[in-house]
Length: 313
Image (cartoon, rainbow, N blue to C red):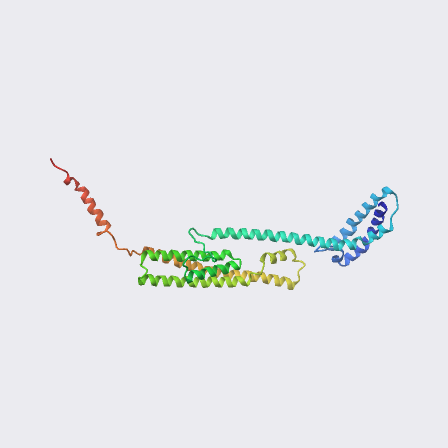
């Protein structure tokens, strides 16, 4: 065994110079790393491997000087055998680290979207379930369900919240109209028709948002940014331009979605204005025969003259 180690150390030391020359000519042939450099070649074949071979040689001297031919041949082929093995191992570790990093980023993104979703919900917003529409849902509510499902299909729950807000505003406005008018009145039908048209327009905008988001659903922004950060030196100009273009597509699509979201916010504001304006309308017949001010004045005069009704013995 000690003779094998002596021969192995001799063979390993002898191959340092040829591999050093190969590495100086092309570092990628002599190094298993993804970004090789000539300085790494010098450190590996002038310091690290010679030190290992010297340590093996000194350790094997305890049994005397008897290097074996088999050990010497093994030392000669050690580097060309170890390089692809180490390169494969490093690649596997890098992919494993990348998968963990992507999983961590995905988890953080989901948590961030969930937090944004919780923050985006307003007080009193009703959640619309596309799989189970409300009982007796009309065409407008069913269209809202389809629009929300389309946004959920493209992994945009932050935009799907707009559907819930629109549905809540729609129900609130109808409740206010029902309190102020009878269902058969012309004013009720006219107001309901206008509100329905506004909501249908908002649903069309939501459908457009789902269509535009579907165009970039397969583009992983985190992956593209990660490649640009990690492999910026290795990427060719053509590949870098392609990755940058993907990010530009994401930015452009997000900009369009923000503009469409602003339209939805405008529609929600119109519905809020409608609800407030309708709530201010007094359509119920007053129960008092006189005004409140006149009733208060009469009651005050009655109290002032209440002594007249006292019994006089």
